[in-house]
Image 1 (cartoon, helix red, strand yellow):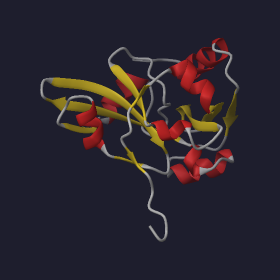
Image 2 (tube, helix red, strand yellow; image 1 turned 60 degrees about the horizontal axis):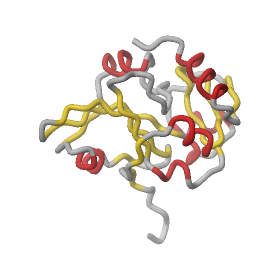
Image 3 (cartoon, rainbow, N blue to C red; image 1 turned 60 degrees about the vertical axis):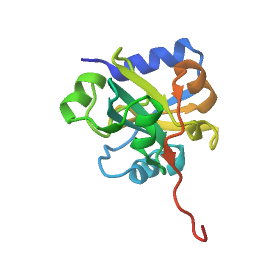
Length: 168
């Protein structure tokens, strides 16, 4: 199990000379919109991290699938992009084992060798900074999006569906 997630994130970003800050706020376990309000950020700046399993065609891969918080994941696109036939969310136990976190506190960075870090490219194009839970529901990191992309260097796969807008 991964331990000291916040310390690992702080060290990773400090060593990479990232422009970031740590924000403490009341614990929030409701919605991405609620935590964005507590952080003082836009919903779309949030990096939502889903721990998934991709299976089929001989593939069995844990994936940390990261997307903007106002988008929805298309797990079938993610599965096909990784050579599988299907994907689903992992159990609370698997999430804890692979990330050291509970649901709602998983950061968009993998520290586990079995957990492939995948990010939808839209996360890096919409805002100068992104925000995410940093291992707990009461601590967040707000980081320059380009610094995050450079340091974490996740695999990029377009698997997210943008929200519907009026008139679309």
